[in-house]
Image (tube, rainbow, N blue to C red; front, top):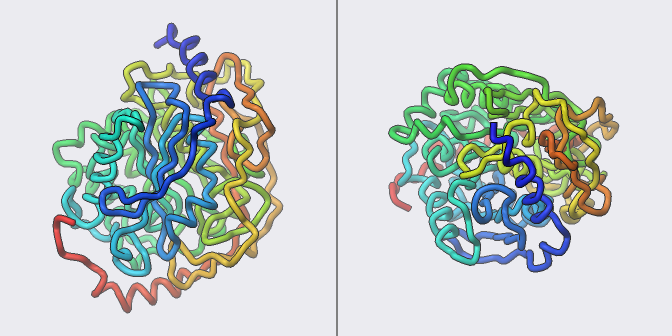
Length: 439
């Protein structure tokens, strides 16, 4: 379907990814919806829809928005796919230790941190200069930010066309339950449906990406599978599973395993387990270690999210056809693409131990195996490069755009202080909840 749009889509992607289009791009720091927010505006427009997308990226506990902005390697994704990136600082210091308030089941659009994030979408989308397409609004986060992305994404599937989760605990869980599985995909899916209420029909066009690492000893790795299965339940019957080729994804030496959940029109959910990746935002910016709970080596998750969500968006007026946007079943194209749009390094990755984005006691250091090995080839490569430390110069683009190469990178990391955080949570959980319903 949409066969007449293939050539147009290729031209649009070429237009937004030309180096000349990114000259005016840059970060600014300002207050948006009451939150100190770092906003990156690319000069490029999205290759689909009308205007630019919006990707909100939420930091983890103790980690700050400034650290995630500096080290997260988000600029190339923004430039490559015409998405405004917003990195807000949790309001009022968070529930404790800078954590987003994802906990439990008592969520509404008007309470906790949900109203802050929905207000951020409202404010940014009302600015004509940003040209944000309301059909291309996405929410993602790491650790507690990943948990928050799930909660708000379930509350407002009509607002968020995509939800990205990196090392995030499952919906309905508490702070003391991060290190062990305390729910099921069925329970999480049911709560997600309840939270959505009248907006639940919009799950039919929402996408989800889930990330975990084999060296994440802070948030239980099995939550990733639960999160993927919960959204698969919400997205309806008929989804089929197929392998996601992690080694083909953008970043620095990606390795691991993954799964696509797809319907007849293409992929809906991507889940990846990255070999050697620790409890950190996966930047995929180079060979460095973990700094402030951002991991240099591994998948460029910002790039993956921007590409997957943009090129598979089900809400845009002229969606790119299956087979041109990451359909894992399409292997017919001429996939000669390589290289990147930017070569961004994502900031200094050699510095101080991390200050945690999941656990207040995590030192953010990485002691893991650094010998991840790419294996295999992309099942449906199309747009590649851009933003990974291993990217080549230029903006080489596959001529017929068959598939979304969403190059993914895993990083070796070390054990973190999950047990300490659980103890911390036990001591502080009773005092963390904010009861005011309309912040």
